Length: 138
Image 1: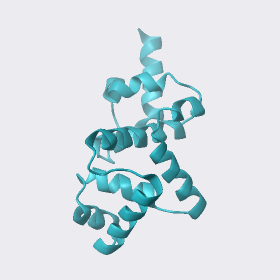
Image 2 (image 1 turned 90 degrees about the vertical axis):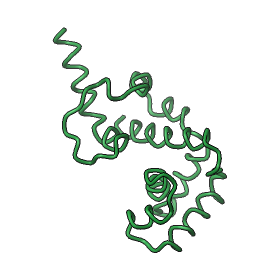
Image 3 (image 1 turned 60 degrees about the vertical axis):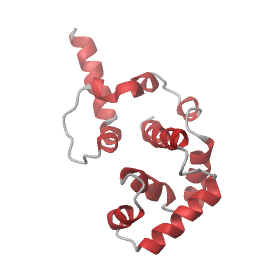
Image 4 (image 1 turned 90 degrees about the horizontal axis):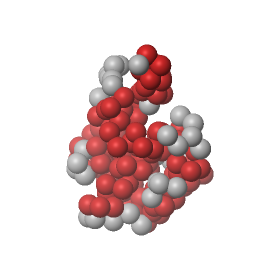
């Protein structure tokens, strides 16, 4: 079905940044729509506010804090999660001192209330970051 194939191709182009994040490869330039996995469900939502309803409140708090303070806390959280919650690796990835990263993680916890030891919450936060990236395309 050519029409469906074209629509899927357009969608995957719109979500390429999100896929690069999802798969940890900034060089992905070709992908199949099925690579979105369960995020295909959310792609049907065309209203940014409606999509944001699925983002954990803790992450929304962090987003607004970053926006008001021109901060880097979501970027820090993303790097920390990408590095399997290794502060040393995340500090290297962000080109910051370990103490700087530790301070940012404490600030993230204080602002958002995120419990880094709760695996279910960490999954929700990681998915929330992806949903933020989807919302940016709307």
